[in-house]
Structures are given as C-alpha cells and as structure tokens.
Amino acid sequence: MAIIKKFRIKSFKNINTIIEFEKVSLAYGNRLILEDINFKINEGQIFGMLGPNGVGKSTIFNLITGLINPGHGNIKIAGQNVNQYPIYLRTKKFKVGYVPQYGGFFNDLSLHDNLKAISEIVIENKSYRTERINYLISKFELDNLKDIKAKFLSGGQKKKLVIALSLLSEPKVLLLDECFAALDVLTIKMLQEIIVNLQNENNITICICDHQARDLLACVDVAMILSNGKIIAQDTPSNLVKNINAKNAYFGDNFKFN
Image 1 (cartoon, one colour):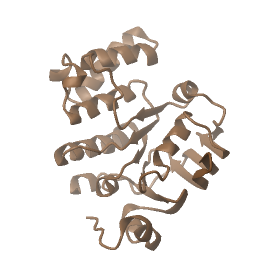
Image 2 (spheres, helix red, strand yellow):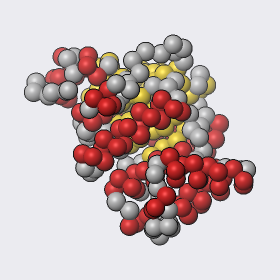
Image 3 (cartoon, one colour):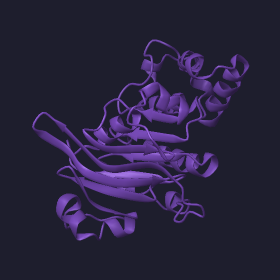
Image 4 (cartoon, helix red, strand yellow):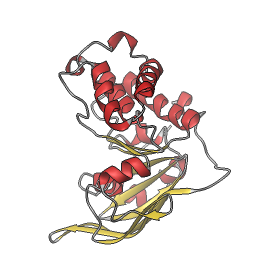
C-alpha cells in the first residue's frame, strides 16, 4: 500500500472543524445505539470509522445526512447546529454527498443517463450540467462505458459511477458507506487512490466506514473505533493499531498493519 501512504496528509495548516458531534445519543426503543459520543472531523481530512456489526457506524452517517435525528445532543456542520435541517438542506446548503453501500444508481439507465438524470436535480445551470458530466466521465475513465446500462457494469465500475453521481453537486463532505465491501484487491486499490486524489485535488472531506480494516487504514488520516455505543479509541492508523482498547474491542492481538 505504499502508493497510498505517500499521499496521506498527516497535518493540516488550518484546522477547521467541518463535522462535530456533541454528546450525541440515540436509542431504538430500549436498545441504546450511541451513548453520549463526541468527535470532530476536520476540513480536508479523510476520517475512518471501524467497529463490529450493529455498533452504529451507518447510524452516524444517517445522523449526518439528516435521515434520522439524535435523541440527545447536537450535530454541527461547518459550525452550525443542523439538528432541525432536513436532508435536502444539508445536501444543498452544506454540500454533503453520500455513497451508499448498495445501489445508488438506476439499473436500467446507461451510465451517462444516470449522470444526466441526477444532474438535472442538483445542477441548476443547464449548460454546466454537460460540462460537469463530461468532466466526471473523463476523471474516472468511464468514456468507453457511458452507453452501457448500469446493471451490466462490474462492481468496481458501479462504485465509480456512484461516486461520480455523488460528486455532481461538488460536495464539500463525502460519506462512503462500506465502500470496500465485496470488491477484489485491484478494485480496492483503485478506489483507495480515487479517495486520496479527491482529498489532494479537491480538498473534499471524506468519511469512510467499513469492515475492511486494513483497506480503510491504508487511506485515512485518522480513524476511530466504536464499541457498545461509545468511541473507545481515536488516532492515526499507526497509533490506533497499538491502542490497547482498540485491540481488546476490535483488532485483537494478531492484527497486522503494513
């Protein structure tokens, strides 16, 4: 993973918090999902979330996008409390993009028509729609696939398409849910390079949750471990894998990174 590491940003000249959770709790009935959690994601950072199934990683994404609201606590984007902001306002005003684990595209539309359909929703300037679509097709090297229906694309090609769809609105924050799941080694490496390039070239803040710990740690600046509704560790990848709480709750004693 040397190609990924050499691009990693390890420090930030101007540290501006773009997402902040303040004492956020959430329960479904009697089941406590998140308990009084606090964390910050800095502008331009690649931030990772790790933890067992059902620990609340996707729930955090749903809280950021506004799909659900916290039971207690505050969620801030760019310094503003967004608890009462609906999904469309968070997308439009704060430019939050989301790449789901599954789907995110129209199966029976071509790759190009997928981009065209979403561009008509998120881009008001008609002339700019074509420019933006062509830019993203070129950026992700999708020219030879633009007339193929999305359902016939490979797993990696579908992932490229969904990321391109999320970038149509030029987001400042991009949420990637289980982005490495069910992908082969070469496709994962390609996706890691895309993620790091988005940080370097576009200064997009990226938040990733995944079960593929090594793949996630290879391309993030900071990661946190969730367990039993709480954040038990947060640090750089190299420090995190040495953290005793992280080992006990998630990595185990035999986990190797690098």
